[in-house]
Amino acid sequence: MRYRRLGGTDLDVSAVCLGPMRAATKEPTEDAKSKAGEDALRFAIDAGVNFIHSSYEYRTRWMMERVLKDHPKRHDLHHVIKVPVPDFKDGGRFDAAKFRERIEEALRDLHAERIAVLQWMWRSDPNDDDLRVPMLPGLMDDLMEAFERVRDEGKAGYMMPFPYTVASTRAAMETGKFDGIIAYYNPIEMEMAELFEELEERGMGFLCIRPLYQGILTDQRAKPGADDRFSDPKFADDLAKRAKVAEVFAEEIGGSMTGFAIRFALAHPVVASVIVGLNSPAQAEGIIAAAEQKLPSPRVVTKAFELWKAGFGI
Ligand SMILES: NC(=O)c1ccc[n+]([C@@H]2O[C@H](COP(=O)([O-])OP(=O)(O)OC[C@H]3O[C@@H](n4cnc5c(N)ncnc54)[C@H](OP(=O)(O)O)[C@@H]3O)[C@@H](O)[C@H]2O)c1
Image (spheres, rainbow, N blue to C red):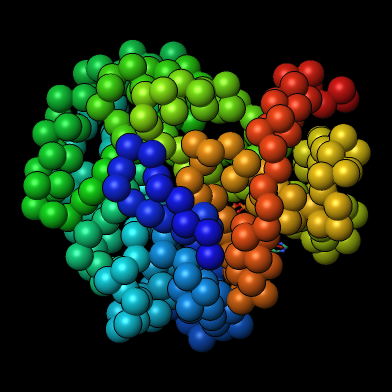
């Protein structure tokens, strides 16, 4: 397993961070999907994954709990959890009790002593920059007081926002209060790449969410079958972009788009780990193997950024 120092922290995290969003049913049941998710989590930890993403919103922690409650390695794991306070319907108000509850429930559900990284989110309704950017300064004092309290109690390590957009990310970076940024990043979602150098200069880390673009950047999505979740016409544009990526990076992709997407996401040194959905031991095995292979040169990131800026030429 490849480990990397997460910028802005003293954490050495596995380059693969397990995301369990689709890895179980939303209610505890005995079913094949949840069993495969449970087996994926066990497999990943055994293979050296020490970084795990989760959220109360996914309602899959019941499955994670089965693995984590008495796992011999549970004290070695670093957890990153979503903390959306204020949430969409909170009218832009920060609620310190709600912030704390998100952490306390995660500590209970994940059988953890500490949450390594709080993925803080400030949401509005509608959730756009016009509301969110001006909202941020008014939240910072209460947020930092609440964070410092749980950090000083030993219950949380670091805080990195998921700011949705570049404008909100810039606003978050300019506060000087966050240890890093968490955002979508893959060859089709390249917005954040323009901030990588500045993140490094500021000594901040970056965590990539959905390196496979939800599964579109995988081998089986070259031609999704009729029963595939990406066969819906609403994914036609995304599949056209995937085809363009396949064409432009044919040499770097070699035999596997899935493997390329993982290696691509790790190519820039500011990206410490990829938060990837792993729903079975076979998926975990493939992704872990891909993350160990030689990484593309940073020039590939620049080339992908140019392709993204050009709208993929479609
Ligand atoms: N706002 C947020 O904070 C936010 C939002 C979204 C996601 N997340 C987190 O990020 C994680 C990843 O997001 P995501 O699942 O949407 O995107 P992703 O990691 O880009 O894609 C994961 C999907 O790729 C496929 N896959 C995984 N390993 C594979 C392999 N070895 N070979 C072929 N296909 C493979 C699986 O789809 P199939 O099984 O369908 O093939 C899997 O569901 C989530 O679990 C969640 O923890 C956070």
